[in-house]
Image 1 (tube, helix red, strand yellow):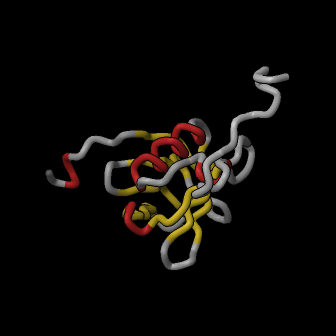
Image 2: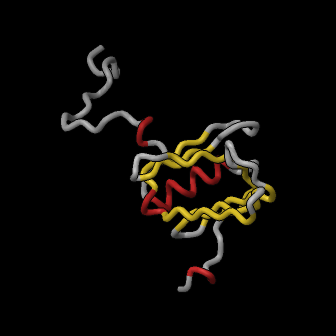
Amino acid sequence: MSRSRTSPLLVNRCRVPQRTLWFGRAVLYPDRVCVRGWTWRGRYRRVIPLERIDAVKWWAVIDDVNFLLHLDSGRAVPLQLLKGAGTWNAELHNLIGKSMLKHHCPPDTAAPVPPPAGNGAGS
């Protein structure tokens, strides 16, 4: 399927820190993130292939940077999504194949978990 004919999964208004960006839009495709808009110098467009994204972080704020893409180069791409940052977080984690909850889960252990004490048997 041609990239130009791929339908976007999500489209939201956005801002880019330290840059004037009019009519800014963040567009999520199945294989890339595209940030576009207009600056003083003309059209702005940045394309980030999903295979370059190592991690995604988001915050529940709307008046500042609330979305951060960590790239395989060690760089980060900060964005301010004006709506839907949580939805973007969930969808990107799904697309890059990483669990959103992995860092909140207890580590896997090889030892079986003993049954809880005081289960009523013999007490």
